[in-house]
Length: 229
Image 1 (cartoon, helix red, strand yellow):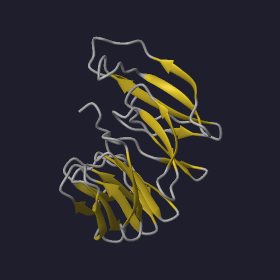
Image 2 (tube, rainbow, N blue to C red):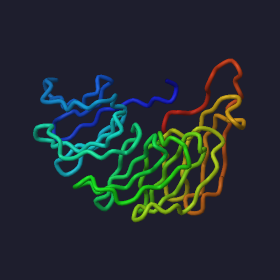
Image 3 (cartoon, rainbow, N blue to C red):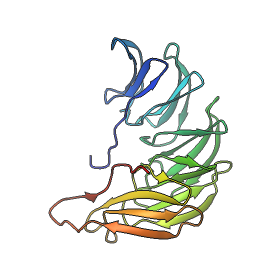
Image 4 (cartoon, helix red, strand yellow):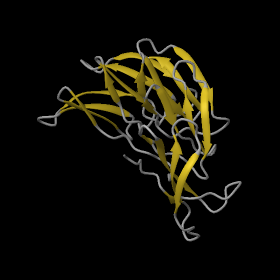
């Protein structure tokens, strides 16, 4: 359970939307707390939903990304990602971008759920949620131990940087750098580390890193919270 990120609530036009371990996405009135509607899936919902143009988008552990109507919670479409989803999606140019435990990052049409592209992470779960900055996707990974800069038009990798641990967090990005945390265990194929990294946004060079002391007394240690700038 150490790598389970949980759904966080969002607010859109007076309604709170949040996922639950009972497999439902809830719409709750912000003023009085009454449940307006809920949408049942077949898996735990750990993905934080997003709202856009009358729709709510969220992933489920039933392997699907969902789009539901804000007005009544009815299904608009769902997309089978081939593995559970806890990555929170982002939208750019009508593309919905997210990662999945099927070891891919996906770009799908936000209006229809049609797959536009998917980029392999070579066997690694993608727990990290993407960030868009200046038209580029920045996203971490799990056992692949990398952060990527990706072209949202086609899914091509612009650069990747080695992160010596699980990079589950949502990156923070500014004009100069991408910041991401890593966590790890003593041995997992190769030694892993709990660190905070600053990576050059344009070329992926490691600018600096701050390391925690190794801790043999715990299973996993490091940074799983998402940084901000």
